[in-house]
Image 1 (cartoon, rainbow, N blue to C red):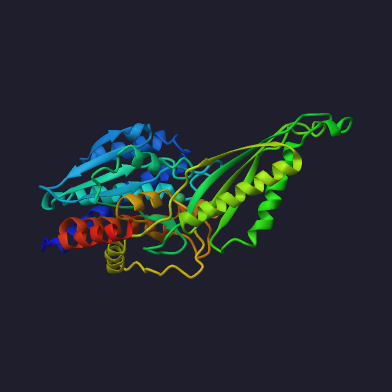
Image 2 (image 1 turned 135 degrees about the horizontal axis):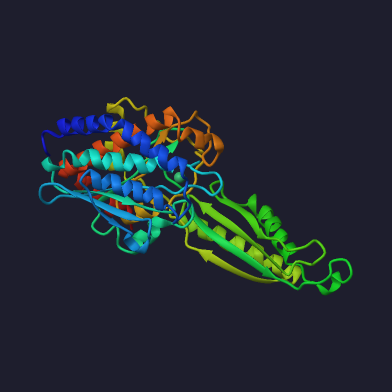
Length: 394
Ligand SMILES: [Zn+2]
């Protein structure tokens, strides 16, 4: 244990406060130019330039993803490697309605603050730029392609309407369903047609019939992506996209099989030919409790009120879940909007550029900087983190 860790934390906090205007400017710039999955060119460039100007060595385009990056700063001698994760993709049409501009900026602010005291700490701090959280699974690709190699612990903070440190997330999968029927004049010769759109509609209805019999944590939701071309033509081709989720991956897989049966039944009923594609989704988040305890203590030390997740907590999915199955990880949430405000809404997008959003971003950066200093300076804590991970990741 490095005895002056408290003093190092104070210096890191002071560094975050001293550069407050810069963090606000960066988070506002990303918010003002929302870029969707894998198109985050300007956001990634801004983050990389900032990290470089503060002494990080930055590798762009890691894992074969143009908008991913890996920024590294080394301390004195051997020690753990702590990764801070930045997300910066926006939602189609809605813009930064998930507040990823704040995630990205808090990650680089934390990294830059820790780097200022890293001369007195062993180990290494990384800021990993992970594209496409909102569909595309940037972190899955970075994991597969070795970008998390040698990472001992990873963390990021997501904006929310409720501050929590150790909440889980749902395992999720995507299912594309395509039906091919036979076109015909819908009025003059409907008997010659096979209606692919009816097959899609029946798939939705079958799923609705199934819904009552699913466990409460299961979520099945979808959209029709193709529904035909003209009202007077029997639709020859129709397609839908579904998301299937549950608290545990094993149950999400069972639900997925039932949903596929719903589509098969619709195909039999209509005579339309079914084809489907399952895309590997996001794993459930396993928060590392030892990291979470340290993080919560740090937040309390700077007067951030930490809440417990509520029973029947509503939640989504994140590719940070997959990271948490590969390395010890936490994914805390910081409130930036009134309790009850949902993500992916215009209200949340406004919160992501508000004074409360900026305050949340600074507290997120401070929590990560302090916890990174804990992990680098306290070998018994790091050992606890590693042992817990080994025991849970079977
Ligand atoms: Zn998000």
